[in-house]
Image (cartoon, rainbow, N blue to C red; front, side, top):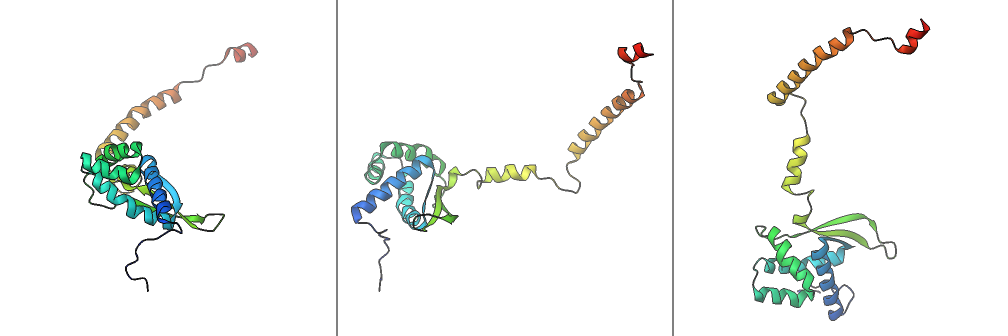
Length: 178
């Protein structure tokens, strides 16, 4: 029985596993999304989400604690600056795992995309609002838009009629033939 054994060892010794997760977390923070296997992504989620929560409190102690996990100054700087600012009001769930249809060629491992939630503009409320604005219904619509369209049609109609009434001029070549 495996009661209380929650750590996925990922087929590695402890030091190798910690280095792997540290490097993957740094890459995730710097690039905002990475492609990896599903097992590594689930282990990375448990590793990186507490670090993001700790980054909300920008103190020297929390910076040193996070640096002891990541071992990368640039990723710590990005985490406490850019990432912590965006996730400040979010109460957790900072990462999203999206399973990909294809598997890895060498060993047929299930692949996925792990990303920071607030950095994908497709799923945010602003992105959804932009998409909703472009949609048009068949019924009614905005009355102001209809008035503007009607006024532009009214001004274009007399101009078109005036052009139609004018007889086309004969070109110099046709005059020479006659």
